[in-house]
Image 1: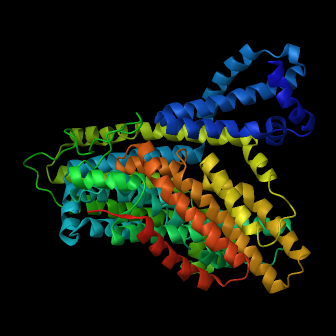
Image 2: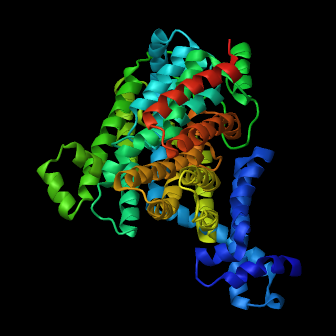
Image 3: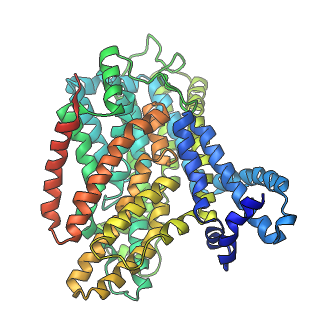
Length: 576
């Protein structure tokens, strides 16, 4: 215990504030323990529930230890037994906090309702009929993957809606052409956050624009168009753009590498689309099991799936508009009333909308529509419809447990000051051409460690903008050069934040991708990470460094797209 105390003593001496900053100073590098425990243990044990719980427990232990240090002040009075007991009680409080958060509660309800909706349309044979319709258009595994990619692009307005809609609809088609669940999960994961993050009308843009505006206010600049700056960042969102391109090229070129290649070979040669390995978190069996399989006498129609999903999407879009409109006030409300359907108004209201509430309401109403269709067509009666809907909720239980633990871990690392410690490693005297790459690397590492894009953006944007502004001033940049330099650095924050959300095993989008694709969670992570790391490295080395040195983004972009094709041709292996 003495050794343990003296390891922490230097950090304790530095502590002069309260909350997360105190913990960051007290524990230093040990603030990385909870996310690292969760991530590393997940790869070792392949049991993500156990791994997340261990990460949460290690975090609550550190928080309990911190509170006891400041209560007792001396080593002799520290009671490690009480600390251990308190750490378990803190787990309950963090889970309750995660559950009671209105946004999280809305997400849980929307997931449960969409799970019930998927069960209903499956029971009616709608999902199977849609797969048969697509099968007439899709003549090969290539076209099946491309169609999935296109549908992912079309549902651009929200990443959760994207994942929960595309997966159940396209999964039967992917299975028909023996596309591995790992590759299918990768496709839908790569067309969720990377698309929503750069869409000019989405549930993401409100946060992104507001963070840019606030960061500029911190350096004393008020007369800027935050949305205009956001638009300027889009060509520099290298990870998003390169990943979307990479996904479709793997399909068109029929080339894979690493664990994904093995998964695709297994699926093509044996017909075993789902991996045998199970992490104990997601049932990799078909959603169309004995309970949900349509009755033999049921006539299946694509309408049974298309219409409820169409209702869900239309109500979601209308809900985003009216929910966001109701949140406007002051000058924004006056401008919106003057031009209610203008592009600027749509951007603002979509950014203000509470997506969790809207999607829950839309999914609930779509489920009612599905029940009405099933009862009208005598596929099931009201009692059977309710049983089917509830059964769909049950299929989401593992996902809910994962999200609750992931949210709890995210709150814990925030309270520990993990992000403050990571960002404190950024030097304030970096060369101007190195800063963008450094910010991108730190944003990627932070988002991977804490599993949230929003959190990473919120942490780094207030630091990156003032730092970039100061370095631009020190290097004597003129107004145009400074503006361009600021845009690049802002892009690095927004894009690096996507990386972790796209491949971290504790990220909610990755969890939802596994669930939606009915793929073992750790197999999805294991096969996707090599691809994510490759695109991350390309974005860093041949993307942000060249543009920071003065090369035009319109030269760098096509050059890298060609480079991705050549690289895939070189290291990728042909899938039969």
